[in-house]
Length: 373
View 1 (spheres, rainbow, N blue to C red):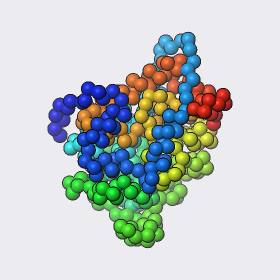
View 2 (cartoon, helix red, strand yellow):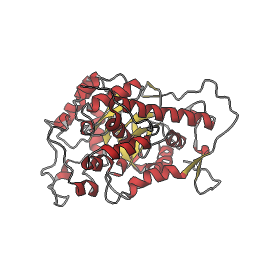
View 3 (cartoon, rainbow, N blue to C red):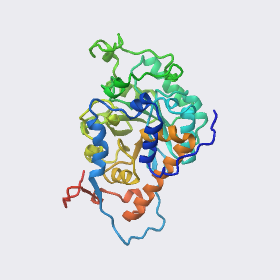
View 4 (cartoon, rainbow, N blue to C red):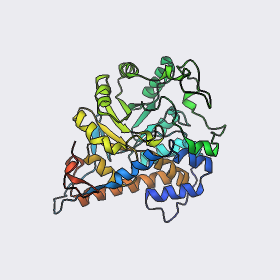
């Protein structure tokens, strides 16, 4: 690893600034992969629009002595309710890849979810970690290969597993298709080197979907099997329906991640924040509920917490910051978001995230009726 000093542009004071600089600097194919979306990008854009449409109503003159953003999850202290989402191929945007990201996460006391499609081995990432790690799985491989990944994560000290359940196949990504994006030969999903798909026949480019690949797609039985194979908590990512959240708990899941995969899989599905309160209301605190999708400001984090989330996941911004500033960029980006969240808490009159509830949120329409679970 090189970790050469990097000069972050002086006007980089928000996550949007990192995104702007990323688009100015990254090659067209890389931009298409990182910032692309499914089909027409309706869900992708709505992830942000839905958060923007919500209004915060502060409470004033409250005693803020001893205020803290800390909470707890799975018996571990969580300094901020902000966790790095699984994002593939960090080496695509910076030569230090996931090593720089995990070191920045440790510097800012941020938990990180390592992607199945990481471009660095999960063991090497763990060796550089100083904050808790989760490991993400797709479970589209032979059971013995999936189990091998689980054991590797357990042995390396990962604290939880995240089953991504909303992408049995890739979405229709026209943005990538138009640029002809392909991974460079020296960047691979290195942890999957010896894994074989469960389906009978791989999906060929330009061919219909139903040609065997879905034979290996995970089901509720897969989730139940996975939960029975490990003592680590298993979270299910990609939940948008309250019934699925309840079924996940019945199958043994110990966490729910409300997500539409950043608008990268199926277009025109709702923004996660639209369905969050309903899912949180169905779960009723039995397991942690997290929100993934569109988080760019500390106020976004607070809105999610108020509507029932225990924490949020942040995906694309880590790659924007990694490309622009390497390790320093990711640490700076996370510090910005943490600082914004603390400022939002203080200006809303909150001493702890447990004090945030739906009564602090109004729709942009000006309705006097609060959004409630």
